[in-house]
Length: 300
Image (cartoon, rainbow, N blue to C red; front, side, top):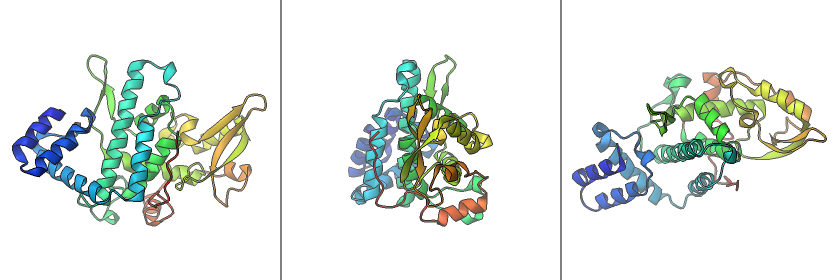
C-alpha cells in the first residue's frame, strides 16, 4: 500500500487525538515503510504502530535507544566507499535498501523490547523457526556500521541472507520489495555468531589492530567463509584498516579476546556450524549481543 492510502484509512478508522498522532508519524516515514502493509491487516498494524509510538515516547531517555537512533542516522547519511565507481541507479536503490533495513531493524527492536508484539516461548522451536530476541539487533546495526561500508558489500550481504528486499521489475528497474525482518534478524544473528567463533567480530565492539601479511588475511577469509556465504567478499568477514603495498601488510581488527593475544592465535581460530543448542546458549549469554548501556556510536 502507499503512504497516502494508509493515511486515508487512518482518517476512516482512528478517532480523536490518536488520529493526528498516527498521521504525523506516518507522514515522517518514507514510502518503503509501508511495503509490508496490506488492507486486511491495517487495523492490527495501526494498533502496533500506536504502541510503538507510546514505547518510543515513554523510553526516550534510554541510553541504548538513543545510541541506536544516532548510529542509524550516521549510517543512513554516509556515502558508500565505492559509490563513485557505480551507476546512480544502483547506488540509489542500495541507499534506499539500507534505509529500509535499518528502519525495519529499529522498529523490530522497539516492538520486541517494549512488548508491542506477542512473544512465544522460543525453547519450543528449532533455530530456523525462532524469533530472535531483541538483544541481537544492536549487534546487527553495529556490524552494518563497522563492516558494510561499500555498496557492493551491502548487495552481497542482502542477497546471501536471502531477505529479498529489492529486485527488478518487468521494466528492468530496481524496486524495493517486502522483507521478512524476523527471518533477516535470525540469519544475521547466526552469521554474527559464526563470525564471533572465528574471531572476526566483537559483540562489544572492542577491537585491537594487528598487522598481518595480505596472504595470511586472504587465507583467514577462506577459513571464515561458511558454505552458505562463499560469494561474499573478505571485507564482509574481516574489518580492515590500511594496506601497505610495499610490505604487503594489512591492518585487521581483531576482537579483544585473551585467547587471541597474537596473530597466530587469531589465524588458528576455525569456524563451525552454529547448532540450535549453541544458538539457545548464546541467547542466554549476556556477553553476546549489544544489549547494554555502554553501547558506543562510531563515526564512519
